[in-house]
Length: 318
Ligand SMILES: [Zn+2]
Image 1: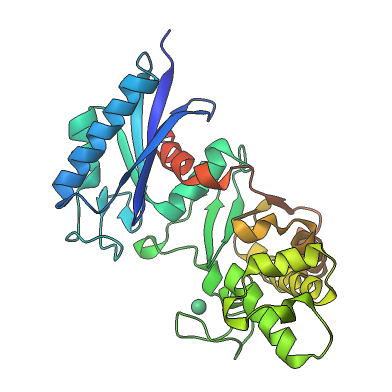
Image 2 (image 1 turned 45 degrees about the horizontal axis):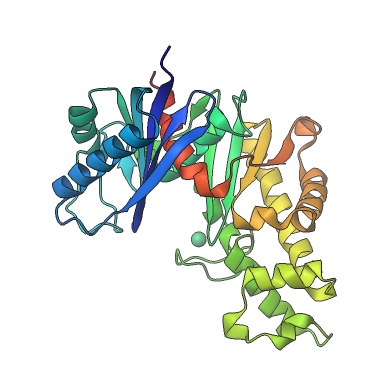
């Protein structure tokens, strides 16, 4: 019997990564092309289809392609179009799904990239088998996806799941969204740097971080210092974890998740972040939820999560 595979396509502003995913989530082969050097959108899609076909001929010629899934910024899963992504040089309302269907002749699903990542976690990752969970992506910013009763919550205009922009410290740090005190300004990689700089300016105790140029300080520098035993750097993660734990306790009240799953660079800080997070989460959780919600890390490798997410969206329509 021929192996059934799904083609997953992750369309980013710079690169498009694509590959073939087996039923168990194994990526059999993957490759990439540039996204924006192809002139028109039609020319881009033609180049993409050709590259996908070439990879299949090379890496899994005997597999049966059963579906194609694509994730892209501002992609609408109902219309199958990329509506208005600022990352791309093309006009709006690009009919991605129709064009991929015309070429591949199999079912095609399209979703925005954040939603695709959440579905990826549900189909192939830490949320497998869960009907109620929240995923928080802790990177440069804070992204989120909410699944309730087995369905990804889209909401009006598919805009649900902006937990990174919930105000958790009224009057707090200025956020890129124009408001103050958003979760993202505290619990992202950039939030960690802001906390470190605040601590360094408010306090006089010695820290390895004082040897860094303040303008060039990164969350990795703070992590490395904390792992080397630097007290101030450890307190930065402790503060970050506590703020996040408190916020997560509140998020539980909206959709009653069974799990909150953390993904992204900052979640790799391990116990430095997770221990204070867990403590503060439990301390602030409404009693009716106590003992019924766990905090866990994503099991998907960061480099493959978007590709798996795209494939997972297609998996769901089969
Ligand atoms: Zn904000």
